[in-house]
Image 1 (cartoon, one colour):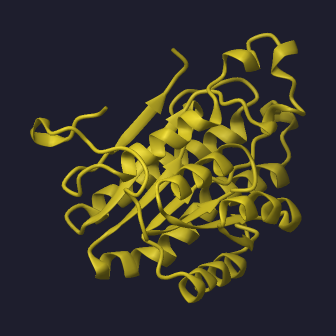
Image 2 (image 1 turned 90 degrees about the vertical axis):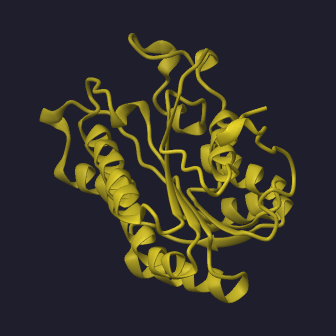
Length: 248
């Protein structure tokens, strides 16, 4: 059990987010699906966003969540998704920017198109979503924007040029949001895990590559989801600025 300010034990368990409307991007699998599952278990009304409509609906239906096919790299698609959330649920009080693109290549062979695609999904998309919800959250005096970062938002690795650039940028944008929203009642949290065992690694095969963490030693996606719920359920006077997760 965690402790909030003043030494009081922090509550945990179902119902803590009862009735609160949450958006999770990249929610059809991996970390995003784990986060959506944890938010539903905590009582939130969750809208799950992802590009693949069939996979998204298959993931959302057992949770009773709202599935909204959405290309987060397309501003019109994002704004339409937010409007649907407002129409079918309510104004979102929680946004988890999780959708991400990860590829490996040395800088000299990294294409400009691949760099732009990574920045669009990992940096521009969270900007679009945050910019769209902040005015309503600010007016209500409450809300929480969670950015899913990475060990690569602070550390650099070979072949990580595009991904690291996008994640360093996302961390900087989180810090700007935190400064701009301080005192408004709107909270911001950066959750930055080390390697997480998700389908993202299927095409990379880290177990067979020198210098990579074997999948058996990676964090489970549920650990990231638990960190997100922890940040969201602190006392309203407490902002969890950053959580950095590693395998014990």
